[in-house]
Amino acid sequence: MSAFLSLPIDKKIGRILHITDTHLFACENETLLGVNTLDSFNAVICEIEKKKQYYDLIVASGDFVQDGSKAAYERFATRITQLDIPCVWLPGNHDMLPNLQPVFNEYQIPNEKLILLGENWLIILLNSQVPGKAYGRLAESELSFLSETLQQYSERNTCVFLHHHPVLSGCQWLDQHCLQNTESLQNILKQHPQVKTVGFGHIHQNIEQQWEGRMVFATPSTCAQFKPQCNEFTVDECGPGWRDLSLYEDGTIETQVSHIESTLFIPDLTINGY
Image (cartoon, rainbow, N blue to C red):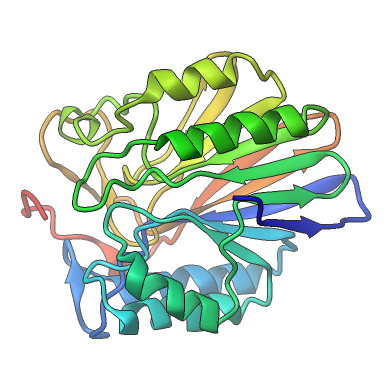
């Protein structure tokens, strides 16, 4: 697990685009919770292009496809590479790595787990996928990689990304599918105050809160969202989303979530599961 990507920047702020949970299909007409996921993903990318915001890196944090197909991964890869921004990724519970990896390799979307961003920042990507399960777990190899990397780069401010949420969302039905060994992650992070934030997807909603003295955040899906603070499965009216992160050399972070405001992507609120 020594693969890394070094991104030199000649300015004081590093900028990251975080997108997650695109849930694409092989068929362009398929929907998830009443939302055409290809159309919503394209709308997000078009809005990002329209804003002309500079980014140093895209972090794509899993659940790229809903049906596991190579064709769906190709849809993601084709569109994301058109942004011409370095993109790194980690898998979600819906992802099929035997289909994902060949496609992303073909499109030169690297499987780096360690990214050096300028002189001051380190980005670490962790695989929390448990094949065939909705919940997540960090394998011992992932925990060892995290611990060793943080020791090696102790002078760098650090962002950690994974797919599953290590903190409770307040949605009982979602929290049964959270990261199952959060305590193991906590024990490592407690020893490394240089970790400024932990980011994730999976729960299809925006969360920003303090955890163990650092900010943690969930980024909304590029398709349908789940309504916060609901014990049972509930779809939210909030549109497709993404997150911007600005990383300052002194270790401070600014972040903003954006949504597509369009009646084209209102989900079917009567659906009670997926």
